[in-house]
Image (cartoon, rainbow, N blue to C red; front, top):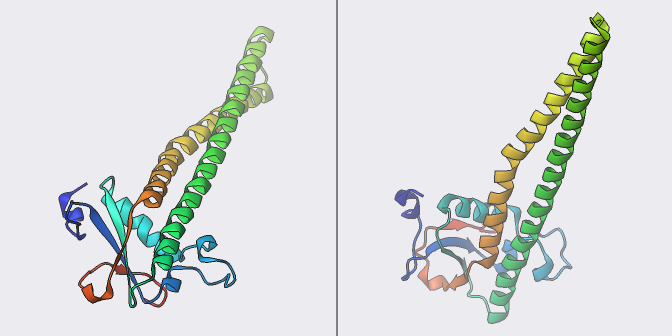
Length: 202
């Protein structure tokens, strides 16, 4: 990662990159469509989740902490809730991404197997036509069509795997890293940070 990217972020005394999040209240970190759910079961605000994901994507494999700042310093209970929420939310996102990757792998494997079967069938059909002598126009079209379908299926399998698999692995790593990151809280009196604000009420 280029050094100039890291320099955009404040760092702790021991060299950890700080991903800052500022909001008025703890409640602003969460989606509000389910007002009755406890905080540790609520989804984080969509913009906040996107912001954290993109920050970690930007800084790469550099160690970091997430630092929250509110207008009123939260109680120990609320700090525990925020830490738990961040951990559980991104563990859940990691599992969703892992499931999506597994579905993609099954799709790619299915396409590859189908392509190989059709390719084998096309070779067998071409062999029969050679034995029988000069094939008719329709027989030639049928044999060539099988070959084209086979290679299209094989290519689709390889393209699905090669294009999507690295992205799934990257997101799984990012979500796991965020879930395991230390979460700190900055008292509002030290409001010198230039980190991004959380979207709701920020």
